[in-house]
Each structure stands twice: as C-alpha cells, then as structure tokens.
Image 1 (cartoon, one colour):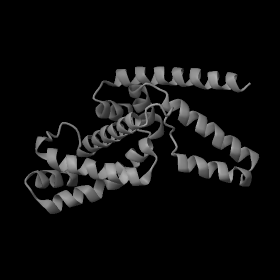
Image 2 (cartoon, rainbow, N blue to C red; image 1 turned 135 degrees about the vertical axis):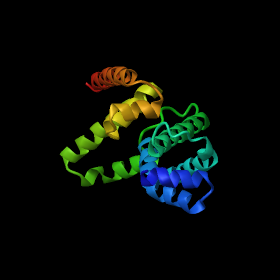
Image 3 (cartoon, helix red, strand yellow; image 1 turned 180 degrees about the vertical axis):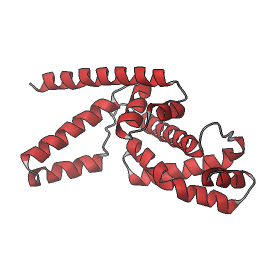
Length: 191
C-alpha cells in the first residue's frame, strides 16, 4: 500500500494527523492548480482552504477509483472555476476578465519603459495569448490549461474532467483552432 493510500485510509477512519499529512503533501500542487486559473495568490490560498475543507467533508465518500491526488486536482479545478464564475457574476458588464489581475497589468505597464523592446513584445504576446485563452469555451479552456500549461497527460486530464481521452483530444483540437482564429482576428485588428 502506498503512503498516500495508507494516509487516506487512516484519514477516512478519523485520524487527524493523517489528514494533516495529506494536506501537507498536496498543498503546493493544489495552490499551483488554482493559481493557473485565478492568478492571485491570496485568492488561491482561500480557494485551497475550501478545497481541503471539501476534501475533509467528502473523504468518507472517496471510493479510490482514481488516486487521491487526481481527486484533489479535480476539486481544485472545480473550486477555482466556481470562484471565477462567482467573480464574473459580480463583475457583469465590466468586460472580459483578464488572465492577469489589474494590479499585475499595472505593474507591467509601469515596467514597460524599463524593459527592452524584445521583452515588451514577449510580454504583449503572452498577454494576448492569455486573453485569447480566457475567451475559449470553458471545457476547451480547461483541457488546454491542464494539458498544455500544466503539462498533464491526456489520461490525467480526462480523469480530472470526468471524460474520455478521445473527448480531451477533440477539445484540444477545437481549442487550438479557436485560439488561432482569435489571435489572427486580433492581428488583423491591429494592422
């Protein structure tokens, strides 16, 4: 039995120390997942706390069909998406929610005069890409972020998204096609 399975079994039986160890083992992973969606460390910490509270409440329902880390990954993604949906509802009418927080955008603007032209172009390209990713349909965005940015295997993405590998492949093809369209459209608007 692996350490994770042993700790999970003990935590299900009510061992608080085992639960604490699970949190310690997976905290960094959960934070990184959430940060890839919300891009704000304070929000990520709050959401991570919600993830572990949910895990604690639902641990007895955990059937072990997937690994605990896959289950936590799925919880983290779902909580991050819930947070984004809630934030978007609160900001209705305020336009596209950028992949970068306003404070980060301000920091980029302030530091532009200090950067070389190449660095400025790279930053602008990255910002365009993040903005285009934000415009993708939710399932395409999730598949793309998990597969390309988080570099998970397609089976892991399928497990997290509760779908098949072929569905993930299809989502990725459509996401890349849509990204290309969005980026070409933006290029045409500039020139």
